[in-house]
Amino acid sequence: MDLIHKAVLSKNSISKDEKHLIPAGVYEYDFVARFRGVLTKGEDTDKIPTCSIPIKATIAMLIRRMGFTRDDAIALLVDVMTEAIELDKNASNELLDESGVLAAYKAVEKQVLDKLPRTPVVGRLDGRPVVELVGIVEEKTNLETGEVQRLVTTG
Image (cartoon, rainbow, N blue to C red; front, side, top):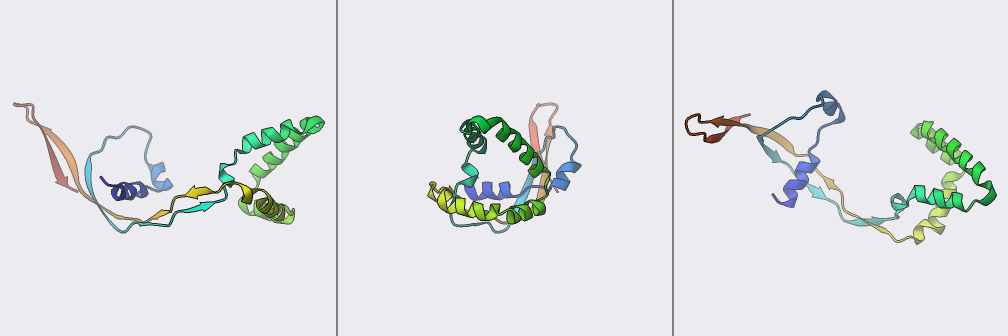
């Protein structure tokens, strides 16, 4: 199997609703399928490594350097993190905008994040193949010889 075939297979997944319909358990399968379609790969790029910043370690270092305000700072962090978790996405975005945090983030981005080494990003794979079940593989055992035959029945 070449990389294009592997990429197509990895892009062909079931929806969350479909996953919920499958009861917990172990399922054996053996089938033949045909995949037809087009796969595109975007250009490789790079980005500011905000996702790579170890947030827990950053907060821990910040707390370590807070001196006598440390206990109050920890309590405040727990309080604001709890509140932030409870916000929905729209309320979170509005809060960031109203509080000036969005503008402050843009300033931090220019003064700090833009100075970090950029992280390479592999181009996005896109494409949804048409999948057709060609057949189901069934095993039949010859009782006299013990020979196992694999037969593909039409799907």
